[in-house]
Amino acid sequence: MTLRVLNTLSGEREPFEPADPNNVLLYYCGLTVSDYAHLGHARTWTHVDVIHRWLEQLGYGVRHVENITDVNEKITARIGEHTDDDTLGDSENDVAVHFIDQLLTDMRSLNLKRAEVYPRVSEHVPEIIDLIETLIEDGYAYEANGSVYFDVTEFPEYGKLSNQKLEEVEAQGPEAERSEKRHPSDFALWKAGGVGENAIEEHRDADHAYETDSPEGETWDSPWGEGRPGWHIECSAMSMTHLDDSIDIHMGGRDLVFPHHENEIAQSEAATGEQFAKYWLHADLFQMGETKMSSSLENFITVEEGVEEFGVNPLRMFFLSASYNSTQTYSEEAIEEALERWSRLETAYERVNEAVDDSDAKTKVESPLREVVTQTREGFTEAMNDDFNTREAIAALFDLAAAAHSHLDDRETHDYVGLRQTVETFEELAGDVLGFDFAGTAEGDATLAGELVELVLDIREREREAGNYERADELRADLEELGVDVQDTDDGPTYGL
Ligand SMILES: [Zn+2]
Ligand SMILES: [Zn+2]
View (cartoon, rainbow, N blue to C red):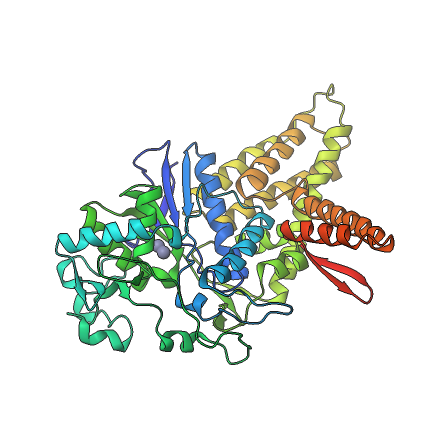
């Protein structure tokens, strides 16, 4: 039974055959850090995490890279924006770092396997410039007024991912660029100057107060003068730097197929003459009612709020109950159902675990439970090999849960071996592969962390009462260094992790 994946490039389910099974190269197009990550991001992250885990379960070695877009006019637009007690930051980089800190915390709270590298655009400008120079030398790109554009007419396969002919492709980039481009669909690799005021105005939010009226984005020196990289080129440069010219899997949201991924293919393959990525996997949209959950619509629930309110396991159950390439809609009922399903799975696991502890291993009873274990493993494997169908994989686990309950309800002497196999199956398939945390360490850590913070706050209170204000301030600063935000209120100090 081999893994088959739905490849956007061919529109077909293809057998998965990586170039080097010991080193599957996986790139995930990550976030632009102009806001906090929301449940839509958490959903895709969870699916990428499970794909990573399933590849390892099949015996592949995985090298997983996820970029962070920290150069973008949406970030620049938030320079100087007021928060409750401060601003988001006084430079593009400060704003980006503010959101990156939370992003890394969010990822940990979701029990995700770490990517090998989280490269940032601001740290890869030399690689980006090198790639653009190659494209110019080879005749695929041209300079105009200090900007550089990719010439889509020079790449005959342009449109192959989004399945369009060049005549059908819409114009790209802002109106103001048109006069310097040879073809309306040409896209910017390098933009002269800083971020234009119009671009910033477009992203500034009338509801927020700003300390700075005329923010400036970072600029870098280049062979074409001061400027900034275009958006698409970053992923080509970072994928080539941290993985290879040609990789196995490139993943992202469905909304990235055009233009982002189409452009990544054009500029990468033009530069290297090799296939950029063999399999293009796209996660479908996460809806809030009728619309997409998105930062620009401000209809989102942040990852931090979601994890705090629902818990990481129920959220995972919710996300995995629809496969990565089907649309999922957020609703309170759907979350409640996931909470209930997680608790059913956890209850079954705990009950069987206790029964194994209580069992008399000397009584040799055989039961059909062992057969159900085998069927569950087969059903689970078949589902996951069918383009990572997590919905069906979870269904197989519930069949095992039901069989285990009836075994324990109906029999007086229990099949010790069958029960032990059941526990192992839950731990391996639900735990290691689907990433559920039966031991509760994800929550347990949060609780312990909370208790430790309380302890430090108590010590700080006592220092204050004793008049040692300097020491109290140091403790507060130490906590803040660890990412714990302490607020003194009339009811005593409160904190956010
Ligand atoms: Zn990409
Ligand atoms: Zn990308």
